[in-house]
Image (cartoon, rainbow, N blue to C red; front, side):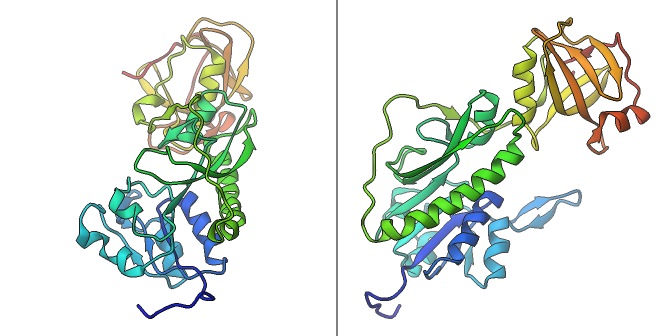
Length: 319
């Protein structure tokens, strides 16, 4: 590549895949820099037709005329070559979905930085937003960190705290955190590029792991407390939702209110247009949004017009 002067804008490459990362890429596009390369995951099958679909980051990058590379690994020199040739000063990584080997971390002159959706060291790993809601955390946030070879273990560069409300789902909290992450990146970059940011080691205490959410976690055990199950429903919206079985029929649950009134675990005690009330190990859940297999998410009144439920039926774990 041609030689550069000290007045040239910084060269900042980007690696990311989902919508959360696309928000940060959009912000970076508006920053005074060159973006020589965007890395993202290969196109994946999606939708009912399982058609190969580009990631949100790829769609954003192509819309702005940026160069995109989609390696399925970065473990070989050949697959790292486009990043080497891009010669970035910095690589910004956001929910890329791939651990970066040391050989990649060493390519940019200023290393690699990551936008992570938690207040590290709490909730390192793949599902920090969901696990924070599920655990009943009152707050979470964004950590901008310098990457090392560990899993979200690198030194911290900046933080932004975000409160978690009692009605937040993963979808609503995701959007607030995505915007906060994009802002924190742009606010921090000038000082970072000028060498005015001092990395801070993560605390030794408070570390925990946010395991990836699996479909099997959707099954609801009504022997657990209503407050716990209510948090799980909010954490698992939009994926994978909650799941119960009534008379052998699986039903997905999406929204619920936590009630203090007692009830036998799994017993449906009340059914009306305001909700389906199901007893739990402590308290009850009033389900307000449901979905039948192959159907749409429906408010309870609309669901009940096509799918009868009655007091006295027993909700069970899916078979």
